[in-house]
Figure 1 (cartoon, rainbow, N blue to C red):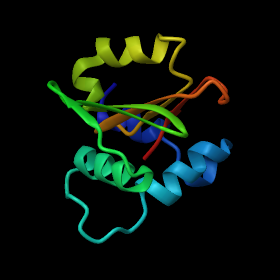
Figure 2: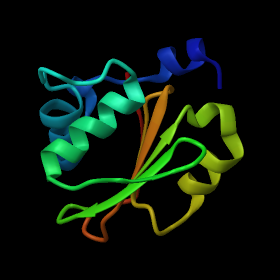
Figure 3: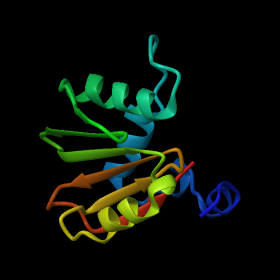
Length: 121
Protein backbone atom coordinates (compact mmCIF):
# COMPACT_ATOMS: atom_id res chain seq x y z
CA UNK A 1 0.00 0.00 0.00
CA UNK A 2 1.41 3.39 -0.89
CA UNK A 3 0.96 6.61 1.08
CA UNK A 4 -1.90 7.92 -1.11
CA UNK A 5 -3.89 4.68 -0.81
CA UNK A 6 -3.34 4.76 2.93
CA UNK A 7 -4.46 8.39 3.20
CA UNK A 8 -7.66 7.70 1.25
CA UNK A 9 -8.59 4.73 3.46
CA UNK A 10 -7.43 6.17 6.79
CA UNK A 11 -9.83 7.34 9.49
CA UNK A 12 -9.49 9.89 12.27
CA UNK A 13 -10.62 9.79 15.88
CA UNK A 14 -14.12 10.80 14.78
CA UNK A 15 -14.59 7.43 13.04
CA UNK A 16 -13.39 5.20 15.87
CA UNK A 17 -16.02 2.99 17.48
CA UNK A 18 -13.71 1.21 19.92
CA UNK A 19 -13.45 2.98 23.31
CA UNK A 20 -9.99 1.47 23.88
CA UNK A 21 -8.63 2.64 20.52
CA UNK A 22 -10.30 6.06 20.82
CA UNK A 23 -8.68 6.60 24.23
CA UNK A 24 -5.31 5.38 23.02
CA UNK A 25 -5.52 7.64 19.96
CA UNK A 26 -6.71 10.84 21.68
CA UNK A 27 -5.21 10.61 25.17
CA UNK A 28 -1.88 8.97 24.43
CA UNK A 29 -0.69 8.97 20.82
CA UNK A 30 -1.86 12.45 19.83
CA UNK A 31 -1.69 14.23 23.16
CA UNK A 32 0.38 17.37 23.29
CA UNK A 33 3.37 16.44 25.38
CA UNK A 34 6.32 18.77 25.84
CA UNK A 35 9.64 17.07 25.21
CA UNK A 36 8.29 14.39 22.87
CA UNK A 37 10.74 13.20 20.19
CA UNK A 38 10.07 14.43 16.67
CA UNK A 39 9.95 11.12 14.79
CA UNK A 40 6.52 9.53 14.53
CA UNK A 41 7.65 6.08 15.67
CA UNK A 42 9.93 7.43 18.38
CA UNK A 43 7.27 9.92 19.49
CA UNK A 44 4.60 7.21 19.72
CA UNK A 45 6.93 4.90 21.64
CA UNK A 46 7.91 7.73 24.01
CA UNK A 47 4.24 8.63 24.65
CA UNK A 48 3.26 5.01 25.29
CA UNK A 49 6.19 4.46 27.68
CA UNK A 50 5.37 7.67 29.51
CA UNK A 51 1.62 6.96 29.71
CA UNK A 52 1.98 3.38 30.96
CA UNK A 53 5.11 3.96 33.03
CA UNK A 54 7.09 1.12 31.46
CA UNK A 55 10.23 0.88 29.38
CA UNK A 56 9.91 -0.88 26.05
CA UNK A 57 12.20 -3.66 24.95
CA UNK A 58 13.69 -2.20 21.76
CA UNK A 59 14.70 -4.78 19.20
CA UNK A 60 16.71 -4.41 16.06
CA UNK A 61 14.83 -3.70 12.87
CA UNK A 62 12.57 -1.01 14.31
CA UNK A 63 10.51 -3.15 16.68
CA UNK A 64 9.66 -2.50 20.31
CA UNK A 65 7.54 -4.46 22.78
CA UNK A 66 6.23 -3.89 26.28
CA UNK A 67 3.58 -5.19 28.64
CA UNK A 68 1.24 -3.18 30.83
CA UNK A 69 -2.19 -3.64 32.47
CA UNK A 70 -3.92 -2.83 29.14
CA UNK A 71 -2.11 -5.69 27.39
CA UNK A 72 1.00 -6.41 25.38
CA UNK A 73 2.09 -3.88 22.77
CA UNK A 74 4.22 -4.32 19.66
CA UNK A 75 5.40 -1.28 17.70
CA UNK A 76 6.83 -1.56 14.20
CA UNK A 77 8.65 1.28 12.48
CA UNK A 78 7.58 1.67 8.81
CA UNK A 79 5.49 -1.51 8.61
CA UNK A 80 4.86 -1.10 4.88
CA UNK A 81 8.57 -1.37 4.12
CA UNK A 82 8.34 -4.88 5.59
CA UNK A 83 4.86 -5.76 4.40
CA UNK A 84 5.34 -9.49 5.05
CA UNK A 85 6.16 -8.89 8.74
CA UNK A 86 3.22 -6.50 9.22
CA UNK A 87 0.85 -8.90 7.45
CA UNK A 88 1.99 -11.78 9.68
CA UNK A 89 1.26 -9.66 12.77
CA UNK A 90 -2.20 -8.72 11.48
CA UNK A 91 -2.98 -12.36 10.64
CA UNK A 92 -1.74 -13.70 13.99
CA UNK A 93 -4.81 -14.45 16.18
CA UNK A 94 -2.87 -13.56 19.33
CA UNK A 95 -2.97 -9.84 18.39
CA UNK A 96 -6.52 -8.53 18.83
CA UNK A 97 -6.06 -4.93 17.65
CA UNK A 98 -3.74 -3.49 15.01
CA UNK A 99 -3.34 0.21 14.29
CA UNK A 100 -1.77 1.19 10.97
CA UNK A 101 -0.46 4.78 10.87
CA UNK A 102 1.59 4.08 7.70
CA UNK A 103 4.85 5.37 9.24
CA UNK A 104 4.44 3.04 12.22
CA UNK A 105 2.15 0.24 13.32
CA UNK A 106 0.92 -0.86 16.72
CA UNK A 107 -0.43 -4.29 17.66
CA UNK A 108 -2.20 -4.93 20.97
CA UNK A 109 -2.70 -8.29 22.67
CA UNK A 110 -5.61 -8.12 25.08
CA UNK A 111 -8.17 -10.97 25.17
CA UNK A 112 -10.90 -8.57 26.37
CA UNK A 113 -10.78 -6.68 23.05
CA UNK A 114 -12.50 -7.65 19.81
CA UNK A 115 -10.27 -8.51 16.89
CA UNK A 116 -10.06 -5.38 14.70
CA UNK A 117 -7.71 -3.64 12.28
CA UNK A 118 -7.67 0.15 12.03
CA UNK A 119 -6.07 2.31 9.34
CA UNK A 120 -5.54 5.74 10.92
CA UNK A 121 -4.04 9.13 10.14
